[in-house]
Length: 530
Image (cartoon, rainbow, N blue to C red):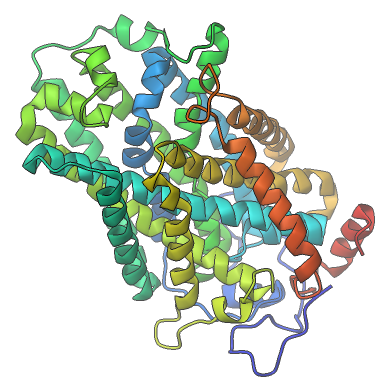
């Protein structure tokens, strides 16, 4: 059921009619067999092109790589990994989790190639499963993206406070950290208002900054310190400080370091409407961002772990940031400060890319009438062709999500929970629906061929497992301060989405297309929601 457009709407509403089916290419992941008119393809999916298509293939890869940001995720959660399995779980867990995440990325990339829109995950779910599948996927994805902005930028504020503490004796109180956090959010909002071309340039720089930063950090820690840990320590030392007696349970918790870091590669899909040859470039961007991060992240974790001088002192660092203590012990104050700047700038690149991805999700979800005040959030600047209001909404909601951190350190963990528990299940839903659709799914020019089903099922099973893992208690005894709020976050998101469904279900709806209308009707009938 498609929403009727108001004639007074700005020129960014959905197309009311489309022409022709989607291309059913069969030439494999290497690329389309003939040139694709992406603007026409978007019209075939039911949307009028209004965003500037100024991002190339490398820029599309760069935004997902920047959001994954190994210098943000690995550094921020390194202290968590030290107590949940220790070095052995961090290194081997990274290798194993990366392999499974690559399967998720491959499966998601295939569906992205068929549906290259800013709505991405929820649009795919809507087309393949019906309106309610799209609705819940959209809310999970949106809350995950907004939680990611809060988590990334607040993490950058924590690192900035640690840097200021080393340099000038600055005391990073919760209030001061919050001010730094708000300043970072404002910076990212302003940068995103200049248009996607600047975002693309910054993300391209970010790729080389991250790779050079990893090389610099690992190189300095390999050369300068006199003492290094043995390979046996790095690859076999197991530490369980969770309070739980079962070592397998502690090791499973330790996998969250890698799983949390490997989030955000859906950014390539959200920027599809601003990417040239998006049917191929967005799919490739997802996959490349994962395997490049997989390799570089392993090198970073190994470099940091070999350079640990005192395990207990690192875990209980006065800086509040264990990687900063490793740098301080191995390189001295000046060296540690210099490399912290490298990490902080990488985190700023990461947060900026996440604001871009989240704002496109806000824009797309509003375009389909899903958000309160959709008429405002879907507006696009005629000068920059950027969804300005959506950018501001993204940073304001992120600020509100992190506000409880003023009163409780546990709140930051809750914000992280909102990110991972929202965004991770949303990755698997379109893949599951694609598997369920069988031959009704018509692949785009980038597809997996005969590997589609086995890789898809591996992805779905993995995401189901880690979603349960995200909700389990991470420390014993379970108290207000040690509770894992992921399950609470998931319940809140689902309750709010259900309540709002009954308010907005008449206004919400992706456009019915000539190519997929009959498929979608079948899916809706199967779900009993027509």
